[in-house]
Length: 579
Image 1 (spheres, one colour):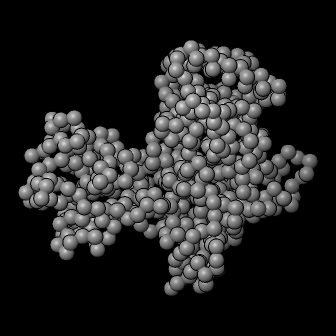
Image 2 (cartoon, helix red, strand yellow):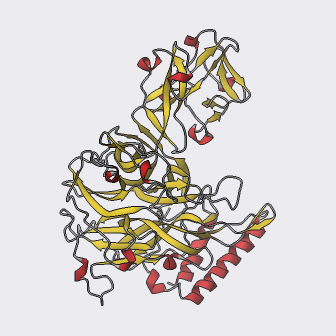
Image 3 (cartoon, rainbow, N blue to C red):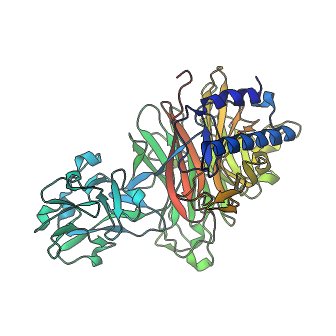
């Protein structure tokens, strides 16, 4: 069957499509693929533009020799590619604090003194009172600065930085002396005891109100400041789940220095991180010792957990901004970098290292030297963002990585998965396609004539191996790349070119070395609300399957990839074949 036959058959499922990437500039065609969507006023205009753009793409691809039936055989998977529904930011806690955006401030509420000692513990919001939320295991009115922090049925009251229950009338609110004022459930009061946790009774207004604070100095002497939100930088997700709790490892900053933290949860949308880092640099002796551990990739070998990660060097605008004090690196000043979610232009790397653990909590670096360092010319700028995967049938370990600063993706197969040793690249045979290790994906191989153009950087690979319906094994790679999505678009009557940004693409391979890029990339791309051209960036994907659903953990940022948004979650819920 030709690829055109595949397209014609799959287009029949268009009417049955139930989901869209939200928000996204890409229209989901049934369960299989995504192509550009335009601002439309009628179904007829949609049909014309849909068929016209599709037809143009097919002509361009055939002209360039991209639609080779033999090359695409076996890659027509119907799960995990798209559409992905964006679920927003991941709920993450460290100790009693909810992790906030890196550029946010500490945030909480002034409450009567002694409140923190009597906070009600909780597992879900249902354990709490009507205006409270379960915040990092404690019932309290939730601190917020954005609506997406509050959840369904709540919105952020920006004047008081609190999540409030939305209402149309008093019947939507509960509790004694409840009121529905300007669409928000509130409560009349005379004393603090009539309010819920996080609130204070205002006698002048006879209302339970919240008083935001960043530390104790913002509160009265008979009050205490309970901090809920703490700004942290979180990136590089790696997930393991074997019919038990979901285990997540990330790199997170402590005083500006990135190190690896771990968490486990039975809810893949919410994680409580251990207060102590799972893997942190040794105590420093001088400023030059201030390194950071980034982008963990963990595999479960049964007898032990193995982590591959990169050790990087922190760079600043001036040497006196990198400080080693009392054996601890306390990073101050502005980093000299851009594209914070991936290694920036001046980001140093000592190579890819390996660590082992019996329980996934306590880790030991073994060996002490890097297991992989640059060797070939295309690796000369450094090795970053490792992604390890073990073949379910053979037990062989493949290690993928970003070579250079977005110059492409490389791969090497371990000599032995348990020892983590890799072959000597000097023994490589120049005549072989990939004798020892090789570059498997480059920017020019990701670019397409219409849908994803002028790709200049391919980064942060993530690979899993799954069985196909035919019974064979399929290597599946998600990656981030910098380029232009789709042609010019019309926004409020003005024709605009969508600016370049980072989005997430997909590729498939029968052997892990020869890859075919999905022709309808990118598979995940966010657009800010109420706009057609204001794209956000998505980096560092990690995809894992839960039942029939595929969960994509990703790092979000602004269009330029500079203002970091921490981790988000997107879900692909495709129909099962035959439904």
